[in-house]
Length: 84
Image (cartoon, rainbow, N blue to C red; front, side, top):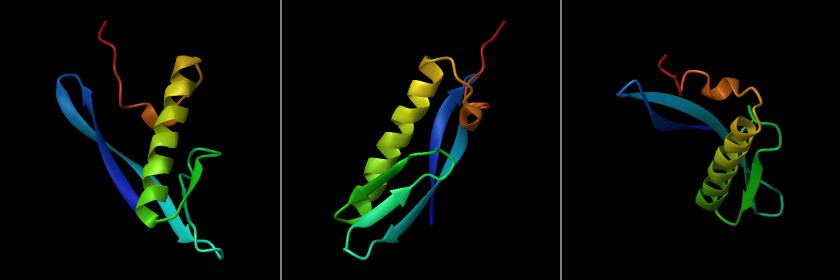
């Protein structure tokens, strides 16, 4: 398990958020990386680093799609604020 930290801008200040990525090696030698907080966010790679890169990109796409379609994205609840 690894924990990736990212950053986002909020109110002019830089805030941090974390996404947990679980990584393991499959019996066939491929690496599997998964973000358990996002159903379906799992990627394979021939190396550990490749699997992690792929699942990070997939997780970001899934979150962006969730936001774009007006669905609830609790993972990003504190990442964005809108001033009145």
